[in-house]
Amino acid sequence: MLVRLAKVFAFLVIATVTVMTVALAWLRWESSQPRDEWFVDRHGEVETVETEQAYTDQGQLAESVRLVSSSGLEVSFRILRAADAEEPLPVLLVLGGHRTGSRVVELFSDVETRTVVGVEYPYDGPEKVKGVIPIAKTTPLVRQAFLDTVPAVSLVLDWLVEQPWVDKNRIILIGASLGVPFAAAAAARDERITALMLVHGAADNRLWIEMQIARRMDARFLHYPLSIVLHWMAYGSVLDTAVHVANIKPRPVLIVGARADERTPAGQEIRLFEAAQEPRRLRYTNGQHVEPDREDILLELWNILQEEQPFLTQAATP
Image 1 (cartoon, rainbow, N blue to C red):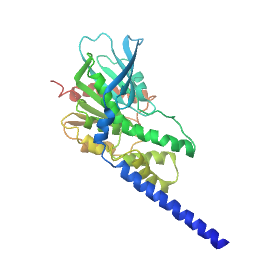
Image 2: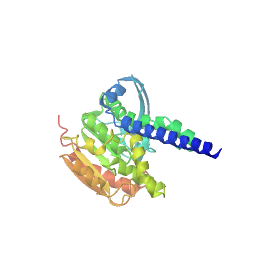
Image 3: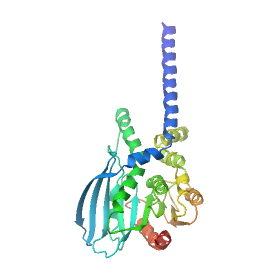
Image 4: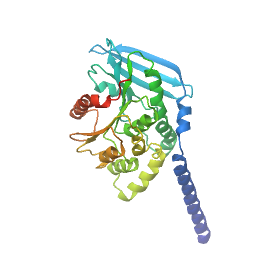
């Protein structure tokens, strides 16, 4: 009896290890496949447009837009701009943290003579998930959103460049925190983006993921292997920030690091700067990582943006 149980147990262990090995091998292969043609197909063409307008207390025009592509891709974004502008305005197209999304426009009390566009990540699932089965159901939605974000940015641009209040020669894409790899990939793919600004991000996506794991898990021996698996799940090689930022040339790139960033591995802003080609600049904010409630850091970033706008629009003259 004991011999039989031992054989059954050994079979189950071998079967489990084999299934996991095959699954991980497939995940590694699938996550590294080129996506250029897929991005084109997923981008499609704008098929449906829904808009809603209102005015802020400062008299600025706030607009919510939802686009549906011929591919089925959906993306929502919010716009804040001066309502009485007499000429086309430069655009700040922002990809922020996953919990901020299109609400990033609310951080701008007065956009002055600019248009701010906050893009919602194309993820249709719960924000917080607990339990094996809910996580298993949510994972495909999260992975789809990782791939969909890049063509979603291009879909937003399709609509923006048709608006009379948009200066097509001054469209600055800003990626902050989680938005950094998506912004770099989108800018490398879509030359309608005339400049790129990356805020508090990493050049090495796998290392960035490992640091996020370390912030939440004490078991150090799991940090590295888990970061590898999550890097595959998040299409880390497809969204390789260092590779994409090198392909922005000759458009300007501005890298902004944080002097006491608790969420980004040390030195990653230097690696991003080194990966970027000229024209490029490196600036720093004081304090920690950017968050919606860290008003002092947001003010610093706004001041840096105003100071560097001539640099970011230096090649904008048609």
